[in-house]
Amino acid sequence: MTIIYNKEEIEIDETKIKNVKALVKHLDLIPSTILILKNNQIVDMQERFKAEDKVEVLRVVSGG
Amino acid sequence: MRKCKLCSSPTGIYLKEHRLALCPTCYPTWFEKQVAESMRKFRMLGQDEKVILAVSGGKDSLSLWQILSNLGIEADALYVDLGIQENDYSKISKEKCIQMQEKLGRKLYVVDLKNEAGGNIDEISKVYPKTCSACGTVKRYFMNKITLEHDYTVIATGHNLDDEVTTLFGNLVQWDEGYLNRQYPVIPAKQSFAKKIKPLIRNSERQVAIYAITTGIDYIQQECPYSVSATSISYKENLNRFETDHPGILRFFLHNFFKSRKKMQENNEIEEVELSECSRCGQLTLAEVCRYCKIKEKVSLYNERKQQKKD
Image 1 (cartoon, rainbow over the protein chains, first blue to last red):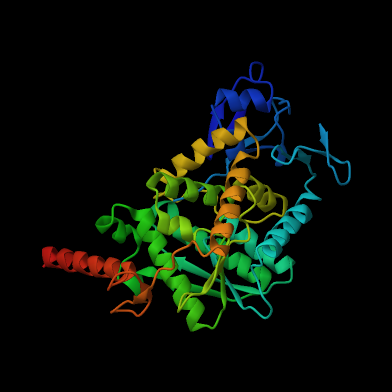
Image 2: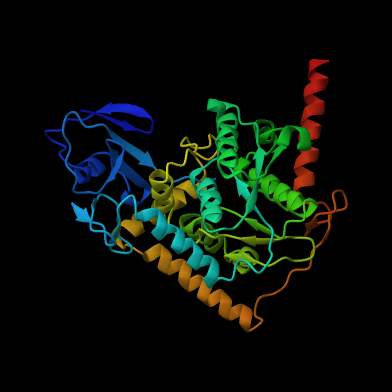
């Protein structure tokens, strides 16, 4: 399954990473600094993935 | 799946810090009410105030522009074109601001840094390694200049809760009493400094991003190339690790700081700093020459040397 992270496509195995929580853990993300979009909808930690889903990790932290 | 607290529709939007689930339809209204409440709580606007908003093309400032408009507050905006070439950063961010300006039908002032200061941020970064700090200086300079020139009474900025907590943490690390004394959601007008307000102060960066997405705001998603390695980003991420383990802790931290600062102000415990006019540009400063004029001078010297090498 392909997900978009930092505008780049990365491959994940959806049989091992079955939901948002597992994805966040796999990518070592800080939950309050990201949003996960599945098929352009914001989803929560329990949301499960299917191979055909379009998943995007959006970083919301900016600064300088 | 969770259900929206207001209409019971299934939703993936959950705010752990409020233990609140909201659907994409109810979320924007809830968020706008939060911002209105912050403005009321801190008495950000008086009657007949003329508001100008500093916009960058990012989610915070563009969301705020739309929120102010939805709340019936007519605000114009200022964009400082920093001339950042990498990934067309400045070009894209300016386009996003123009799109919002057209959508809201308000005025947008565009300041071209290269024309005004003799160099863009790419050039300033060659003489100022602390580029984010120099960038902040030039933005504040033009915010105040345009505000006064066009008779606005208030400058609004899109600083959110994460920004403020990060600044507070940085000021505590440095133990900078001057900055700590000045940090508040409303900074009153003083001499020729216009009043400043931060309406998003009680809302997290994630909450603002959800607002931008649920209302379809087209903002620049890429990070400023200069801020990628900024200390503030590192602070922000690490502070958010606390937030993950203790939801609401950042809000609590900032709230208690403001409470304590308000008390200090009421007891006249905050030392007022006397400012004088910069000998070159006339803007208020602690030194004889303000920081903006010093940056301008350094850029001018850099350009002269570059020209001499070419010749």
